[in-house]
Image (cartoon, rainbow over all chains, first blue to last red; front, side):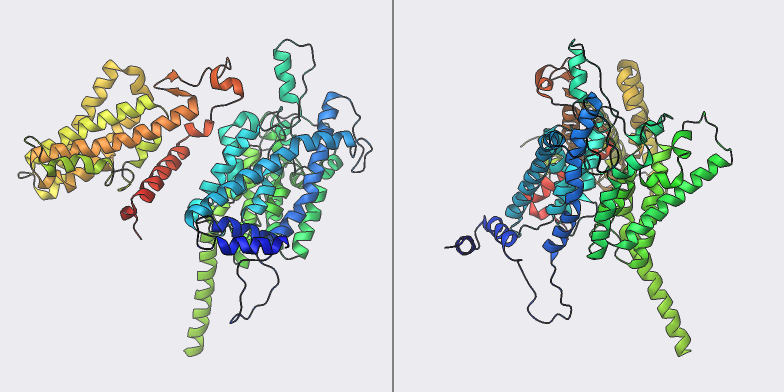
Length: 407
Length: 214
């Protein structure tokens, strides 16, 4: 008897019982969707929620793998044991040593994220007597990519529980949430444990441990790795050139450093029509617009080099796209179909404001150099309002046309 | 029952749970969010409101037949304001540090919707004894939620209860902190109070389905 029949039998046996949703979830996850339309529908498509989500996960996998190598690379680079890699295919980057450190640090994040998140989902499905929804598949993959490598696992678990319950389940589960759950998780971590989410120690594996060893009296050199945004916010210069930023050979959250792979992921999402190109493009336009405004302010001489905003304001506008995680946010976070605007015109407004506000927060609030997640959460809240006005505008325009005709 | 009839007992016990001013009527949220980061402040705030609402309800109830209805809001405001000033002065005299922590929120008891709400809804139509019980009950319901929220916020946010460390020393890394535990800074921010209140409402309504409105 194959696994499929076995599962089917179990499903039949537990039908109507309390644990039924759990078995059903396993069954649909491995074999077939819960419900398919049989008649009466006029749109035929092969993809369901699960396939859509799997597409996003496929687009994320390159970032994850790169993030693992980068975790090891930054670790050994900070220790001074390897030379800087020269370009994307640099010899000191794609090494087994780097991968081992990466696996050791990043895989637990993935496992904890999925384990805790799915446990909460199962729990709620059983309590509510609903079917388990696959909503956590993408969130579970996004979460490890947007946290620092050294984040303690218990913090991640607490944040995941909070994010899934408050970000999603209280609103009614998958498809009903107002806020992006992955960003809710990040926001929780950021405000709850700021020492683990910002500063110059957390982005490189081993920096915190090294500090503790020094504090304990060992004779070692401190290592640190500041993000480029952090350095710019303090008017410091950075040692990375633009290609390093583009390829992703820089310290940062696990999966957001490589702009190159994010662009590839974006093309994949746009090509498969899973991600909205309108949102991605308009977010980037918004970010560039704000960057240009700040550049204009600097060029006009309105602020001097002594201003605390000078460092980030004078960054050439196009560079805002390759430092920080605006690109990652635009491609994987802003395009979440549940929390984004639904109308096409709304998507342009929604995306533009995300980009615009991200750069604004980034520059004006040195304490939150990474304003992208705040901007996306803010616009998540406004997305239904934007849609409402777009729809009402359309209704009014057509009513007017009707009146002209009848008059 | 002698002193308290069954109806009178209900006046006190109802607002504690099934008709709680914060979780059911959703009044007085503002101060519940602002001052619950510490348990001590929550307790003092609860006592202050208990005092103001208990006495205020009696005063308004005694005057209920002579207050012209057109100016009743002004009269009510004067009564609350007088009582709040007493509370404020007492705090400043005997608990100066605490009154600095509570800052404007003692003064803002005047605008606490629970108080005006009870004056309007109850004291204007009932005798002084019943009004007193109603005031005590509602203020206690308010205080209970404040204490619950304050308990979780102070315990998880600062690792202390009433200012006494209960989880160990976060700087010396003793107790729970030795295992890598850290205080949750989010708990000290007002948004988290809103979420905690929301969770209380959630638990309460899932236990008592009658409270769920469509």
